[in-house]
Length: 200
Image (cartoon, rainbow, N blue to C red; front, side, top):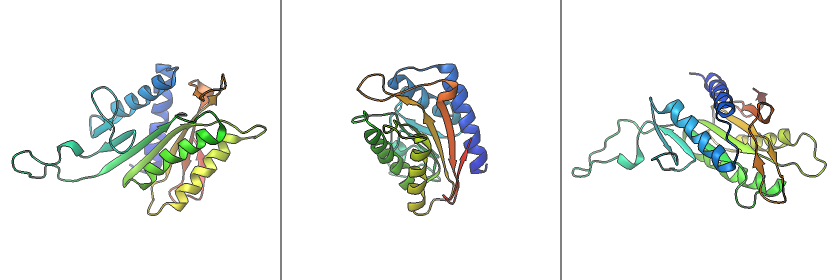
C-alpha cells in the first residue's frame, strides 16, 4: 500500500472511531487512540501499546512484525522471528507535564515526535494538540510547519508522516484539554520529501 493510501485510510478510521467513541478526558482520549490502532492492525501484526494487557515499547504504539519480548527461545536461545520490522510508529501528545502554555505543549509534542522520526519505522503517525500564543493567528498551521521542518532535518525518511491535530483548549489555567468533535479533528500529511503539507 502507498503511504498516501495508508495515511488517508488511517485518518478516516481515526475520525470515525473517535467521533463514535466520544472520549472526553485526556486519559480517555489516549486509551481510545491506542484501542483504535490495536483493533486496526492486530489481525496482521504485533501491536505494542499500553492498552488492555499490552505494554508500550519505544513509542506509544508500535506495529511490528515481531514481539520484542519473545525474540529468543528460552532453552535454546534460537531466534524466533524471521524478520524484524517496524511497520508503524505512533506517538500521541495531548499536553503532559508542563503542558499549560503554548510553548510547554509544543515542547512535549516535539519530544515525542522526534521519537518516531528516529525509529526505523516504515510509516509514522503523530497525534497532538496545541495552544496558541496570545494574538497568534493560524497556530495549528504554525505547529504543523515546525513538525514539517523537523521531518526534513531527520535523515533517511521517505514515507512522510500523518499528523492528526486535536483542538486544544485551556478551560482553566491548568493543562491543555484536547476535544473530540467533528471540527476538532484535523489531518495533515507531510510529503515523503518533506517539502509540502497536504490537508486531509
